[in-house]
Length: 419
Image (cartoon, rainbow, N blue to C red; front, top):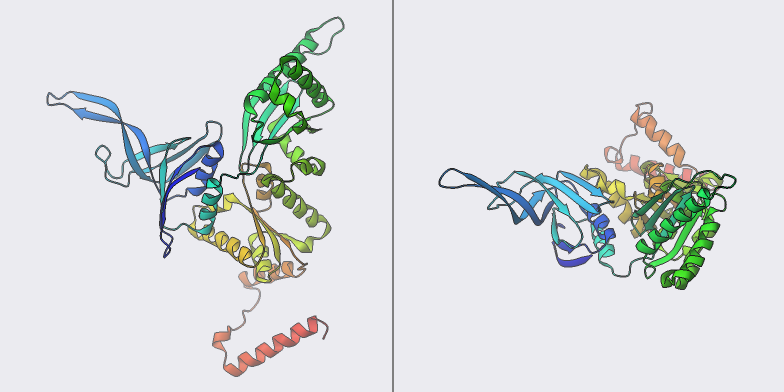
């Protein structure tokens, strides 16, 4: 991502940025930067009708700069486009104010985003997108029978580069159809990897399948690369890692990332660090649940106790149309960082982010056990249900009553600690 201009007020965080996306991952960053109510300006084509002096009407497409207020936002990972819709919010020669239009943000097309407030999550996203030292990518190939998917996994999104499907007949005595179909299938996968995998960026290529198909394919790849003199395969054969996958469908990639021995091969990538911390959280849920909590209530209470070592949070929570909800999670992230915790923001375009979404989208690994958090939730629920009488607030008490209450709290704390 190239940053052309950044003008953000230090007083209230309002302002605009002008960007140019260069890679598919830049468009994913763009999608995460946008929110309902933002103003986006970029060039677009619009059909304009004109009436001549004789009364005839002519129409032609005119390229213009248009500013719209975002009311609808979509990301298309296959076509690599971000589409935004909304009313025109700036004076234009050809488009009246308030007229609805759809803008398409795509690679190598400059655009500007204006916000009323650029919070820290947005600013971090810009820094990440504009940082040229991006994490290494991973390529994944999962296959089974005559089906294979070739995917590229970057720091924020998993993109399907090719789907290969070949009808493979059953083995029959005296028939060579099965062997020919297998060779045809392997050749198609071979060419898909050669076309779509850039070995200058890729750290490793994971090849997964049930049984021995992955081994047979890798033998075919090595033999064919020598015969055809395909230097990318010959020079990078050490980057291929064979592993087990249950099928050739895309969801089988999750199984590759769950294997610790496989992830050790890509331990330096950003993605593997996220997967590692997610796996650690899942293990703690089983072995030491007092050090692993999920859900906003538990995580926020743990943060108040300065207990969070690692915060795991889904980027889906920052795309809420409710500004108050976004601000709540932004404040949580900033607070955890200020108190020395590490924050991992998971992309819902990854299987790891989808797993985190299944446990509310926010979780924490604690520095030390907090067995009382569940009791606090029960008390809070009882208060909300009106089952527990609320205590008087300190503001409603006299100075002497406040002092006595504080002394009682200290005594209780001392007793809990065994004094």
